[in-house]
Length: 336
Image (cartoon, rainbow, N blue to C red):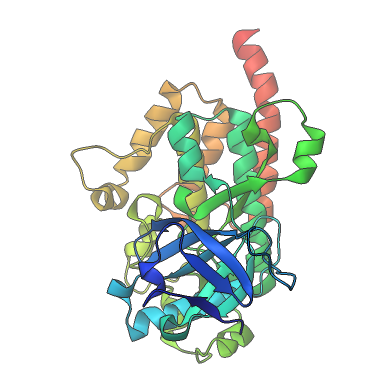
């Protein structure tokens, strides 16, 4: 492992402008961001002190570790598990883990591509996205999810706008020289911390026995409530592709409507169990004038009954393209 060195007592104590060495390459801390359990640093290579060796990380790098205040043996094991899963992925719609660094007392550190921002940032700025922009983003997420599931039978189980990052896409930049910046971004999945792993060989690699109930439990009590499928709150339920499809549908809904289908005075879990969120979603889609083919697709993804949702990513992608293409004729009839 490449060592990570700095002058602070812990990586969590790094401040803007501090020097950090990734191997022999010097970087300067640009900014830091905290999540529920994780800590991410963005670093710029120190141009005043060029390295004598080429760095695989380029001029900018993002480092991810665990917050010291939540660190425990269980959390450390989960983080190692995430890195073991993530390290095998190489896909345009999955944030690349370039290297696992040796942080000494801080343990393993993930060194990944430095992205421009998150889907949450984009939604906060835009409020409501165009149908084309939202559909393109869902398509990117679908491609990343399909890759992870086909390769290693991995489900994400924590899909939310904060875990979808974006970066410039050279191909899109060349094809779309004019237009908004968002039309030139590629969206990628990040944070595989509570991913469910279905493939037995991969379970062995990361240290989980083949028949360990922990493999089947799939961390149902974790994730972000507002994007979690109702069945994931049920004890003993085995998550499936349908669970991630629900989260995708919720994000699609939010991008187009500008909000989620939950009431201010009712707890989200109560609405998920009662199904009232689904009634709210139906009304809000109609109020927002979302074309019927797209509304029907979204409602099919977020239905309370998992067996009624699309059961595979390729099938959902086909339905997505079909619904989007049919909106042209739908809108022509509506406004023509």
